[in-house]
Every structure is written in structure tokens, then in C-alpha cells.
Image (cartoon, rainbow, N blue to C red; front, side, top):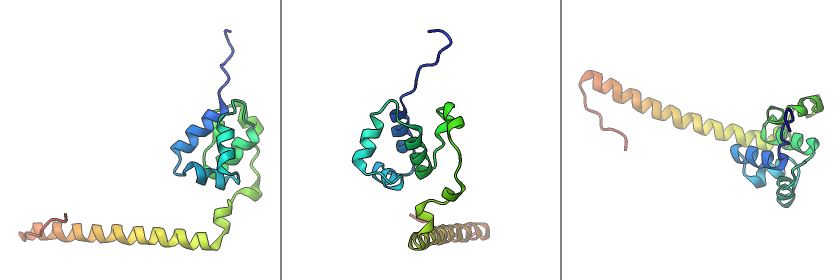
Length: 131
């Protein structure tokens, strides 16, 4: 048929989006408030509903409207859902803060060692390289 686009398999789009996200299949399903077995049912559905795709999209921070232009007309942002459940949980916020704080200090330490080594090389000192 000329002029008609081939219908995309929405379940496959979901599977690809989850695979390319930073989340595991289990985590993506949990974040979208589904169980893992339901996720597997969803990825087999060629005509997966836009509601379900939108829910996963919010959970894994993926905009399915880029893959499915017709979804732009369908999707309406709900301001009450601008924060996901993870950001509403104070314990999770503290865990994330501590994680990034630790990563920052590790990187800062590596940078300081590199600066010391470079300063030593400029003075003619020979500082051993980090293994």
C-alpha cells in the first residue's frame, strides 16, 4: 500500500526502550507499577495501549511520542505526576544523595592525584603513576 505507514509493534518499542534505559526489566516494571510477568506480556502485544506505554515512559524517562508520532496527540502531561514515586520517598532521596556524594569525592580524589602528578612532572619530580 502506497502512502500508508507500516504499523509499529508497540511492545517491541517498549522492550527496546527498556533495554536502552539504565533500568533492568524488573526495575522498569516496578517503577511503572507492574510486575515482571506483566512486563513480558506487554512486550508481546503489538497494539499495546498508549496508556501503558506512557506509564512505562514516565518510569524510565523515555518519550514514546518520538517513536510513535500519533501518541503526541494522545498524551497529556499531568502536573500531579511530574515527580515519580522514587522522588517522593525521602529514604530514596537520601540514598541517591549519598551515592552521588560518594562518586563526587572519588572523582575529586582522582583529580587531586592527577594534579599532584602533573605538578611533580613540571617541577622535575618523578611521581609514580597510579595503577
